[in-house]
Length: 308
Image (cartoon, rainbow, N blue to C red; front, top):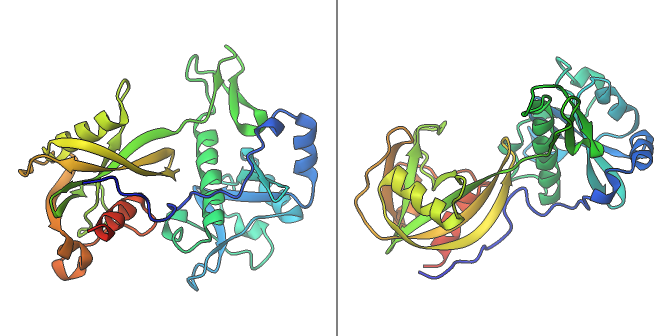
């Protein structure tokens, strides 16, 4: 098996933003941008993003300006500078303190929706910006206190650093690396049904977090061995995907299976099987479902399938 290139970008990639990190510590510029009626704000409410057109199947992001932006900022939640979109400043703002933020907005502004439900339908740039906002706001709301001494923290660098008011420790946004891999042996691939899957028929690639002191290739081999009992040989990088649900980056691989017999870890998986190309091409006819279209898992499967 040879390395299979990614056929197209993954969901949540291709951000249109210039992150303009040099502006984060320019307090005067940040203050002026926050007050500028043309500045864009991506609101996040309880991990959901503001969109319209969802019911019609044509979702689009709603970024607020002027008075509408000020109304959600009045909810008092954290905010952060995301970057510049065609020279316009873009901020994320969390309005989860409001029991229902929609009455704060002008009529017809849409609704707050789980990004994962519609990401495959959103324009790529919009999906990336909303994912960026969601991930950063999750970090801000979950890291209000110092992990060193427990004292309260204050935001700095336009929301990208939290500084302890007691011991002065600095805390930065974190992204947890996770490997996700399609194991291939001959004309079959290995898919598992996780204990955590919401649907009873979905089978997907195996995945797991990278442990301290471990290379990505070592993490692939360990996770496959632990979850399915399969020995893995060569490992080939495919692509990556930001996955801010809540704070991961998925590092995708194809991997060479060296053994056939599956022994599952029942704490992680309900089942795991080798699937043929014929089965993968028509999963419904064979009684199972593939992972969601916006996932890197689906891309790993589709790209393998197209390189018969």
